[in-house]
Image (cartoon, rainbow over all chains, first blue to last red; front, side, top):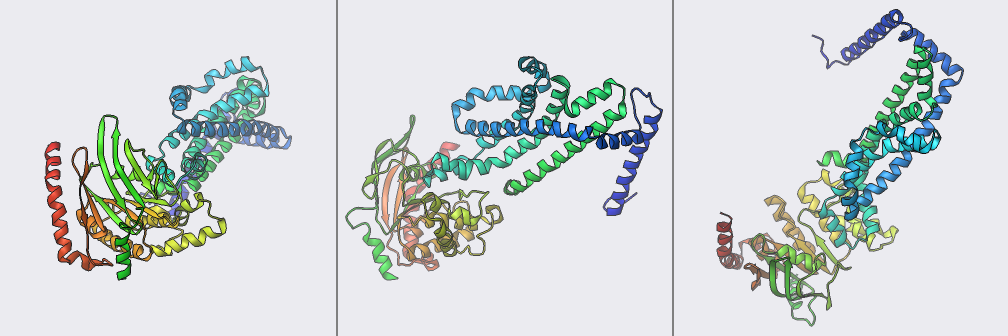
Length: 255
Length: 271
């Protein structure tokens, strides 16, 4: 048995796993149906070409613009609404069921509807990304805000805090880690929203590239784009975890 | 320190008491918690309120703070009726009520900040109280890094920071282990001697009530009301030696005898 507690042993296992994966990709990619597969080396050389001719960087910039616009709007709107709902009872009782329903709905199902409602324009894509990112943030903010202990609210009242100061001193700092959990969950979903809208609303960005190369049986072009999406997804997850840990130090150790 | 003792006694004799409850009652819907409560607390006096669990002593304290409205009668602080929490009244909470995302320093300066204390004074004034309660060196710690006793020291410093003329203690040491509780009781007495205020101290511990109070208000009955007010004439300042004073034992047994039948009844009610 290899001792997995040794650093070098873990690293070696890691490397062997990657090598086997790369080898299998190369072997099956080269021998498979040329209209439905591409080898590692083919994908890599296509990747270099797509960067050199500027197609991939342009598409990434395009998609990320959509992502940042839609998701940041979603974060702001969802956390504001979530905080309001956690403090105003009738708002919570009135809207809560819709939030649960929409949180559970696979958002991709409503993309065609939004597309036909708003036309094949940026606005429709923006709304799609917004909706993908909105509900995880709202759900988590609401769950956080309402779990604020009543004793702490009583302390604030006892020290004559107004509602504004209560938000500043209690509600927002307490809810922030919950909001960030929502942001981390929403980050991945919003990326799905970007690709879905580029598939289904109108062709553009990385989603557009995938559609184009797939339609023309240039599978290495599809793979090269997907790898970039994977990298972005991993980066976002890492960033989300970092943010969450940074602001949730007191929460993790307190429970 | 004997003058501190006489000053404490004089509070109840002076013109207007700092806290006055006049025929106060509280109902939650159909449930009458307490009724017809009359008491006064002088400006340099510690009055403890003792009674069995569920007798409404904490509810009474919340009414004095203005966190809850009374159903009958009136509570006055410095002659004006209490309708909401007011400046100069600070509470120490049973479960400390510290904000876990704030350091000791920010927790202590919380009330000062709300009172509009200028930024440049905030730190100095908070640090002064942190030193007073013996938390120096821990000002940048978070509550989860502190023991229960230290957390309540922080809660006490937060209340003292606003320089209150009325200090409300809601079973402040109930959630703390026995040895630490004893230390904190004497600490609180020491701090009070340095800076006497009007203090209302709610507890279910008879021993604590007799040790801390210049007078002990015994609540009893359902709904509860004041069964008796016991004058505690123990020598001041009080300390560990007070616990072995013959009069201390006498008073403790007296209060205990009065409450025992009630506690028994409550026990059988549950069964």
